[in-house]
Length: 257
Image (cartoon, rainbow, N blue to C red; front, side):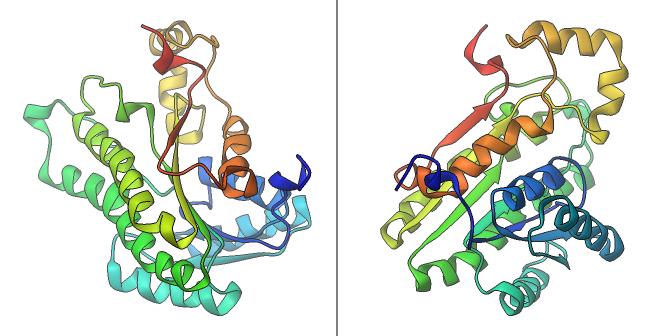
């Protein structure tokens, strides 16, 4: 195996949850550019289909789209059934779907807590459980979660979010314990502060944006394309002996005080 072939995803298949927009959209296109057949997932059928078509045009890859509720185990089962009909059990599962809710803990609403736990954590359980069954039968697979620097660093008003992302770190280790004997690698990517449509209000806040640049040794917000190299590494043969790890892609934020 040459150094470059270890990063070649030609012939592999991938499902990226929450990939009709934002970070997930960039991740799906990155896998497609590396050669994978990609399933774009979202909550809106037209939006997911449009993203899949755009990725296909940009990369020349084969793409599909699916829509199902990642927080509902029954919907996940049906949705993965559709994925299996399209491409079989994915070689690569990227658990990217997530939400954010902010409020001081004394004012935090039950509904917001439930939304965070269901979308950021329970969805990862549902998807990993369902897809790993096929991976075990095949004897190979890559499961990659999108975590956060907030799994290690706390800030006011996001204690609940941090709890879900901290749980992702340990769930990934648990997947390693269960699945490594079956030839499956489970790892996570923990982004720092990234410029997306969902963070635009923070970017536009001059004081907060200056804090991000000052707190990050790289001196800037992350670009979603900064995540693609780490993803392709964890999705391909180059990482076959990497398991249960969380790779921080944060411009150095978690390395310094």
